[in-house]
Image 1 (cartoon, helix red, strand yellow):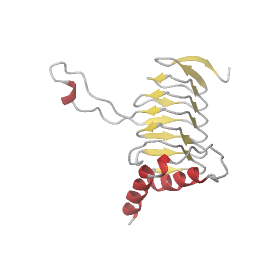
Image 2: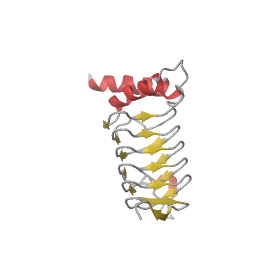
Image 3: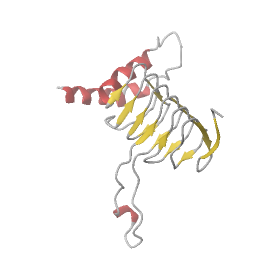
Length: 178
């Protein structure tokens, strides 16, 4: 029965809820319903879903089974999230991509299309993190507590606690607590 509910929620999410207006569109006609509808559906889809989670318009996460998200966190508009653990109080800008797998390419004698994919590597995002617009986070990366990822950054390596990073590839600019 639980599996049937998951499939129904998945169908409703991708056919209807993902197309509803953005959550911060406080027009009198929406009454905050888009945020509430997406949250209610994602509670059934995610492996773990905290309180007051905001899944924005167009967010894509496959079946949702690989997502654990903490309290007061959100997935940005048009974000694509694969397998990830997202802490509490995480802000995410629009068009963020969080990848958990990649293609194999090491054997030059075999076309890359036939080499398959690498094993899944979960992305872990700590508490109180701000991820700017159009950030790309590569497989297996850990982002430390209190970090800020600047818009457009490509995060290829772990980010320490309270670091502010930006660029392609992302580099530490400074620390928030120093």
